[in-house]
Image (cartoon, rainbow, N blue to C red; front, top):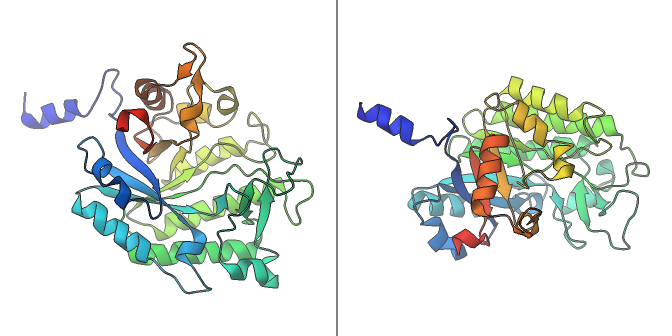
Amino acid sequence: MSKLMLLFLASYVLGGQPEVKNFLYVSAGDLANARQLVARADIAGVQVVYSWKMLEPAKDRYDFSAIETDLAFVRAAHKKLFVQLQDRFFTPTAKNVPAYLMTDKEYRGGIVMQSDNPGEKKPQGSGWVAMQWVPSVRQRYQQLLKALAERFDGEIYGVNLPETAADIDVKHTAGFTCDNYFQAELENIAFARAVFKKSYVVQYVNFWPCEWDNDHQYMERTFAFAAERGVGLGGPDIVPNQQAQMNNSYPFFNKYKGKLRLVAMAVQEATLTYKNPATGRGFTRDEFEKFGREYLGAEIIFWSASAPWLR
């Protein structure tokens, strides 16, 4: 058997599924603290989460110095960099979009409060999300994507857009409709794919506001759209057989195995808190990987640095 064939077979595991590449997942500014983890032979790269505000501190003034620093760091370690461009945030004080979006009238406030359960707002909410359904806000987000692509297309391994879930009061949020939010997110996906011609584009898709069990066909249309446009999909959580996800994105990942340009899933800090009902203990690395690879078709897993197997 030739060496080439041996290398090909070595890249696969039992069942013919491609071997999953492990990436480290960190927040912007934390990469240097993870130096020893990045250096591990079983870590192929790093996903770093950057807020919109960090990359555009003022209108049309872009600051990509954090990405430049991180890119140099991972290159020196002979690893790859995935950039997550974050437009939604999960603490009450995190309004991490440029100030002009919140002050200039044309952006209609720029962000809206998130709550744990739509329509049941906490006094201070649980976070914020950019109003992508407002055309002027969406246009500014796309300008940022364009500027990032002009500098980093082909230099970074990929860019991913944050989860489709948004816990907002859909009945009382000005200008919001279920359909225009869905169409706005698809427009952002298409725009990202158009400007990033070399690097991977991955959209995180987990839930859609207003939808359960594909009752608006949002989930079905998302996967068909991604497959047609050469877009990768992924999600912020691998939770084996979790009912909520099984009623939303997971069955479509299974249906579209082998049809998407890339599938990149994450095991974040919150994911690690879930218990396997069969054991009463947290899911193991093998359980995450097996479900991610065999059911979801994951080719990359972004691991929180707090994952037990990395300690």
